[in-house]
Image (spheres, rainbow, N blue to C red):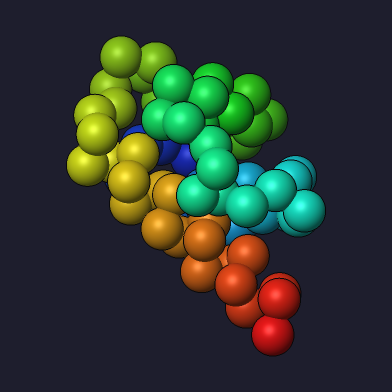
Length: 70
């Protein structure tokens, strides 16, 4: 399965699986952008993101992180 910028939920899950101990709220958007680009299944255009997309990804990742904390 390939991922693009609009696959926020799937990207959030992938980031949680790769960085299970990292609190997503501590990640700056520039670093989040880089982490998304490093995902093996990500094939989106590096210039195709914006603040809203990155925030949606961060919130999806946060949901996974918080679920694991419970």
